[in-house]
Amino acid sequence: MQPKDRLSYSPIVDRPKLALPGGARMACWVIINVEEWDIDQPMPRTVLTPPAGGAPMPDIPNWTWHEYGNRVGFWRMLEVLDRLDIKAVLCLNGSCLESYAAIAEAARERHWEFLGHGFIQKSMQKVEDEREAIRRTTAAIAAFTGKRPRGWLGPGLTETWETPDILAEEGYEYVGDWVLDDQPVTLKTRTKPIIGLPYTQECNDVAMMVIQHHPAAEYYRRAKDQFEQLYTDSSARATRIMALSAHPYIMGAPHRLKYFREALEEIRRHEDVLFWTGEQILDWYLAQSKG
Image (cartoon, rainbow, N blue to C red; front, side, top):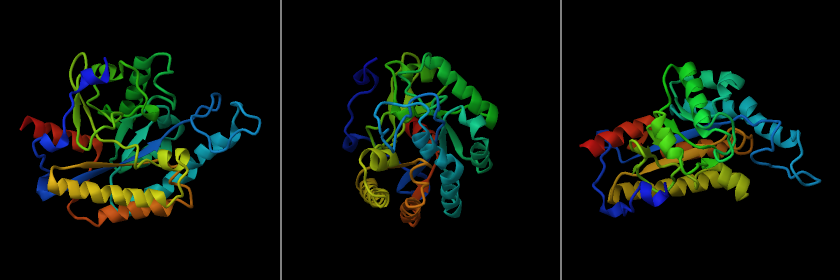
């Protein structure tokens, strides 16, 4: 199904106003992406270009660059989130529940939401059986947390033409891959609708640090600028949803952590901004839509 067949064009200025509870002005959700990179495959991303070119295996420099995030960086970020009393969303590969069980346990203890992110970090266009990969991820999260995940984010936001259809058929209620709005949108599938929640490419450390090669301070500056405009928009027109995406191997690095902390502190100072999980945003939107 083509994207234009899944949703119609809708100018945000023409929509009914969405109201948050308690007079809140806007909502923000923080997504921490935890992945497992297969040492027997080419690395999903690289910080160091192989000196002889190509994609050598094993790629120790780039595999360990990422692994640092799960061994060290995540725990720095967790301290920041704990101190600011922010319940984040753990977006993780299904295999991480075994490979990085301590991370999953820390998130479960804090009642974070678990978001499906493929079974291992690999494009959904390259997995042999997309439905089976989704099912394995679902089963792994359900077994660990005691509940099925409600949301999905494709590795690298990758989808096939059928991904929303398969997700809906497998019981998923929302997806974060469709980064085309500041409010939730309803996507058609061949069975029941699935909601697209506002995720982000702009306030995403992969885009900023690894692809665009900005200095570490860009994460704070851009998050602040993004927030200020969305905060203004929420007052003038309708409630906006802001997403902040971070990866432990990037923002958990020693020289970047303070900018992750300062971005959250800046937003946290506003008492009329809700820090919600994806499923809280979903339930609110569905209730508003029904009303």
